[in-house]
Image (tube, rainbow, N blue to C red; front, side):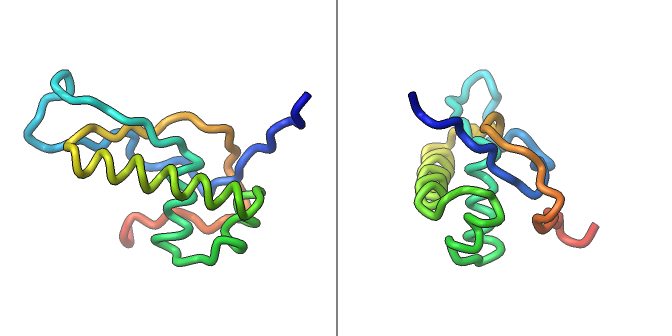
Length: 108
C-alpha cells in the first residue's frame, strides 16, 4: 500500500482559469489541463527564479517531485502555446499556504 500523498502548498489560486487564442471560439479548440500545483511550480521556478530545492520546500514536496511537476507544466504550457490550444487551470492536490509569497498581478 503506497503512503498517503501530501498536499502541495501553493501561494494562492490563479486569477484566471482559462487561456485561449483570441480569435478562436472555445467550441472549436482542443484544450489541455494544467493543475494548480503545476502552475505553482512554473511560477516559482520561472517567475520567482527560485532554486528547485527552495521551491520544493515552499511547496512541501521533495525536490524530485518539484522537478517532475515543473517538467510537466512546461510541456503542457508549450503544447498549448505552439498548437493554439486552450489552457485550462484546474485540479491538483493542494492547499493554500500562509507562508508562501503572494501572486502579484503587476502592481494592482
